[in-house]
Length: 294
Image (cartoon, rainbow, N blue to C red; front, side):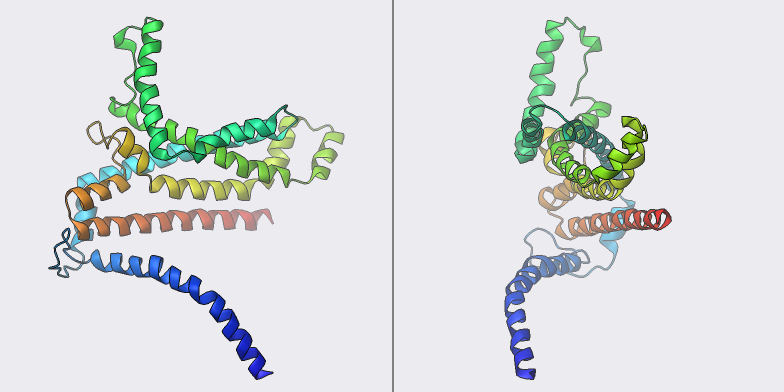
């Protein structure tokens, strides 16, 4: 019996070992190396590295550019998370009902998610520039009233957010549709027999049962938005006047343009801790809400 158990344990370990080696090699080791670099004065490919303690973290937390990038990222995250959730939820309710060609529409709305973010960004740069300019001239809109979507400091971040929502809403729509299809039909039929309106069914049955799905989508959106790099890099390169410089873009500029590897790594560790903290807060809130409901 003991030999059999040992053989089974060795067999299980043999199957798990490749995945463990992959995880340690490409996740754990790079993370620990990055953590170590954040406490050094590493500069580009210079092999001469010295430990400097928490100086990189102190500089990052006192740097106005880093604080501004953090504030911009938080605003962008809030805008995209709210708008994408609303758009995805609205599309899910529309395409979950008795709609002709709903499978086709689902596929159409999901297609942007299959496109590269760089390509999506270039398409929207063209739309905000050439296409909008052509429409403005066609409608004879005075230049004073025309919107500079990517050239205005106040509009550039909103323009980026609209692009991100267009690209990702279809993906989250499918998740919401899956959640709606898991709602028991008996509950809906019972509510209809009792004379409940469609709005009341949505508000009192479907939305409460979708709460875990809404929470999951919110977590996915928040983590994705906090790490966003492709869209600001391709659309504005952080401009105008740094109005769209997100934390990820700030880290890129610090690490690859200024070659301050240690300082950039410290910034990335701070971003990692922020993501963990926000995720933990949202999880605690969801758990407490679930406990109250039960």
